[in-house]
Image 1: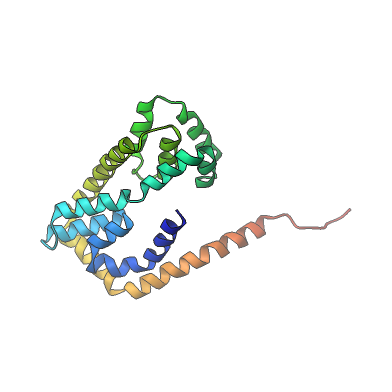
Image 2 (image 1 turned 180 degrees about the vertical axis):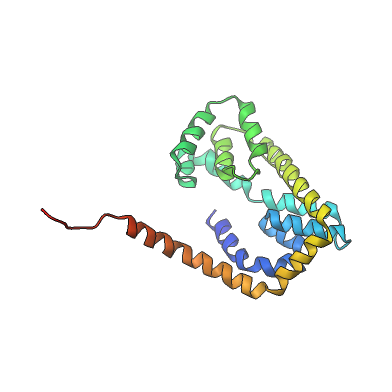
Length: 205
């Protein structure tokens, strides 16, 4: 799982370079919705087949999901506690383990939607005893639905979206450096904010 996280960090500065030259490869490697939309836009102007865009995007989204399922199967609440610091999400996961199996299956299908704690849902599915074959099938259905929707939007935008992607490609070096800078600066900013919120030591006795 740490390797998966590391791959994500490595890909982040490479995205501006790959999104214009190899959008299908990027969507397979990252499962990124923006890459899926960009690849679909290239499909609209005949650069790649649309079915390949949808297939690569769906595979890119689900290729490592079995790891979260397996972690939930092995460690249950322990791994969910590592995946989220939100007490509300942890309480939801504990209640979800005892829920109707149909609720778990529906959650797996919907887990790819933006805003849903995807890894927590998949770990919960493993913890609740959902079989791997069933999990993979439901996961693929959800990924195909989301990929198809995003690809449809990108295909509809066509040349307009391609022009934006090519503009990003033109300034890829600057964009990549900016992404790296933000990634390095965020922990420092958070640390400074935490220090500024701490009450001052000492004071009158």
